[in-house]
Length: 167
Image (cartoon, rainbow, N blue to C red; front, top):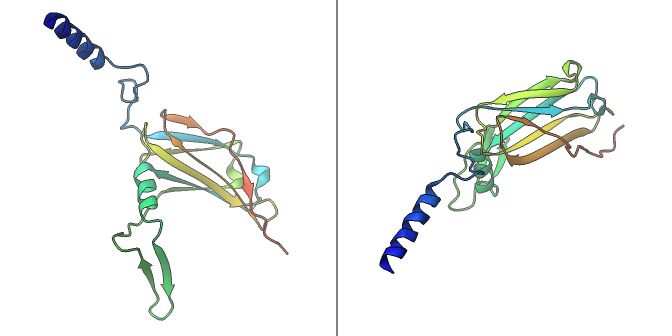
């Protein structure tokens, strides 16, 4: 009976050390490489004078944003300085995402950006926005996901436009 348990233990050990088919750290994924994002854009949604801004946050930046969400930044007119106020025990950390800009006149069908800060297997948030075709509102779309590959095509974005009362 002891010998059978030992053999079963050895078999379980061997099987648990084998790589699984859905392991994101397998050798076919380079988590140290950059990630390229391709975003299809319908330029007719935007003003001819618009400059589209694409912003990318990585997993670490998203975590900082969550941790410091209750902090506030205000501008003191007397001292001409920013004042940062956080709840007790929270230390403010600035987040600097990757930002890319594209004049609408230079966009054919899509925007492509490469980020050295987003890693395969890591969480990211992408936001793209610009002046709407009415030359007043802002049109934008965002997505938050896991970077599964070195090349990611963002499809089926839910574009939204603000509804300000424009003159």
